Length: 272
Image (cartoon, rainbow, N blue to C red; front, top):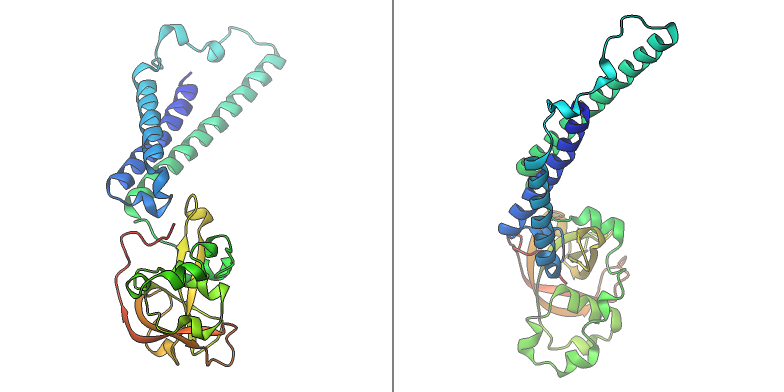
């Protein structure tokens, strides 16, 4: 019976650890580093329900020393047949094995609790962008159209995100279209292969959660960019678009910086 209660408490403890951690992330505004903002309220409500049920299990669980739950499996018999003695030893071995598993599970739960509290949430990096291929998420790149961009005023261009410009660059490589359109965008530096003159200014687009996040990026033409900036640095780039002069880049048009500076990571680093 004690083993059963320990297993039950172990599951309840894990639920409480995950629940409290989720509520803490929501209260500190960091839950959006894991899920889309539209799911935050739903997640918080379901977490509160899970925590309430877990606390209920703790309050109303039967005690291990309840007389009605006495385990008779370990009673000593005056005389045992050889077969019964072997079965008894086998049961004892299985019980010891189960207790070892429960102990290991308890250690895992404890380690999880320490990790959640001690390790701060981290955003996705250029390593993820490289493995998922920048601008391969075509659905996200169809948001802002060429006609909409032409109809927008100069003030609107400054509000265009990396996602907007990446979508337009996919739709047209006509340099004349970008004349007079100034970009002001922020993202992480992601290497464009071995190109020494071009890097991608990258952001991640989240549809549901960070697991499905897809990278989108704008090629930035900056000769010997590695001498000034490191991969994964957050930078703000202001400038216009011109024909890409890189000999190895596959992008016909690139953003040419008029100013570029390192900045802090935004409070909400993802795009939606």
